[in-house]
Length: 99
Image 1: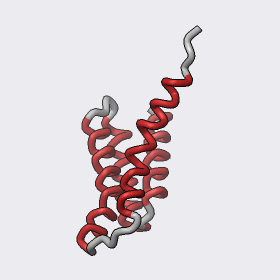
Image 2: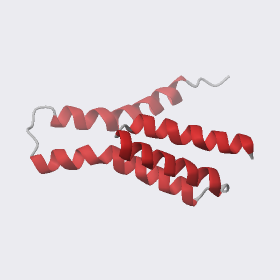
Image 3: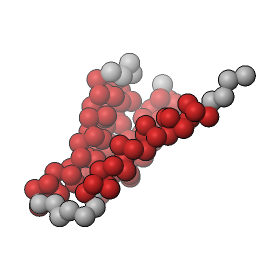
Image 4: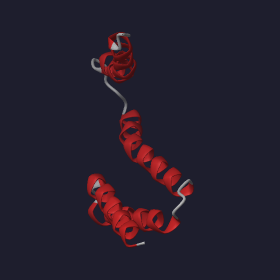
């Protein structure tokens, strides 16, 4: 029987180190305002890329389009990313369950 522990440990390190190394190296340094603003946009940019890619590669266009429109409107109206994602998922789910 093969032990999976070394594989699990290696994968844990591979996912943990890229997250903790920037925190350790930048914790004692003061960042410029431009760098801080740039870093604040990364979550929204990543979410936008994932959403657009999901729409372009989706086999079912109507639920994907309705979900992105709902998420976009909720994000513009409320400014809450989590609410926008859950709203888009809910609308897509409801359309998929009725089709």
